[in-house]
Length: 263
Image (tube, rainbow, N blue to C red; front, top):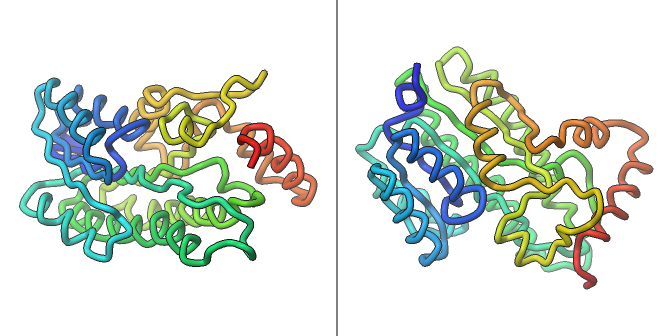
């Protein structure tokens, strides 16, 4: 069965305007799958949509903030009546990094709502439709951060851990319904968001993945769920899953401090 037959004729990409989301859009368009791209920023959203249309597919856009309580109804205005065979949730960014007890709790809730509440809403809606049809795929973009708690991104690490465990359970529920579920775990990836954050990509020995490569890897292994660690980061994920936790957390903290600009 071709990708279009299994996951077409429409794919929804939340966070589909730049970086890994744009790479997914380009590659799915090459496979002949029509797209609904969801993002907040109109300029990169329009640019990615135009590039995908140039590959000969139909592309619709929804300029939506997934933190808006009306996000799902706004998305459904575009998708209702269209057969969506693939959902890619690539919108789970770290929107707030701060020490937890001195941070802004409303900003912390935003991290939770984007990475958990919005993800669950879209997976529930589109997953139910796929299960009823007996085919489809759900790809949740995760992070290596979800394997170990880290200072100043403790909540982000926690929500990424939630996403991975959720994907494992959803995979078990959907596997007999013909729907593939995959948590695609990314490490350091050269995306516009990470570049804006000022990450030090040039650190010696740092394993930096390119958006096109991890998107290609995710699509190639969509049927190999529930979890696929991309970009050569499997050994790092296995190490972060080990014990003793205190030593691992301290080592990860020191490595992260080298990556991020001085606060």
